[in-house]
Length: 277
Image (cartoon, rainbow, N blue to C red; front, top):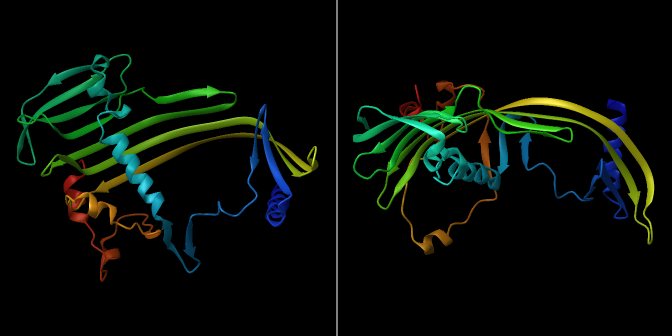
């Protein structure tokens, strides 16, 4: 298998130089033509002598942050269904509590038949703003669960801890922590055909057929801490120039020794303050 695939991918690389050659992937009645260019190369690079430090496209980090904000801090998000689909839940008002010095209504919610989440929301007694949210999939619940034409997918677990902070004009996300487990599977037959462009009917040069049966679980964790917020006007916003790339450092576990003699600001104390115990 390795020998076959190595030869195949090597052939694709050589074909990049020939605009008349292209590849088409087919599974059942579905097919897709593969672009014959190098614009889709890996968007991150690393030094062979330092595999922990990466240069990443800033757009990738931007997309991750926007995903967290859209999916976990917006009332329109499907993850906030315990607020915008109240018929799916039962609610219990608990004793008034204190969050960051403000008195709050502590409301526990649990799903009915159609609900997904169970958890607690902390609502300001004065402004009725959501100051804090703790929620997770209830036992036995999952979402995006489907299996069709040999392709399966589901979100088997989701947990979130979110804290908001009052600003001059609104409440803003201060801390977001999300854990998510995802399952996917595929059981289909595929073919990849190498073709040469012709005036009438493109010529078939080679073809590889194979069956795929795969299943895997993916665990994702995000943590976002906003250190500072500043109101800016439209001119300042339009004047911001986003750098093309940014540097990442991979850490397999937290170690305070890592940050000694570094100029980087490490909010370890801040993180511990907001993390759910």
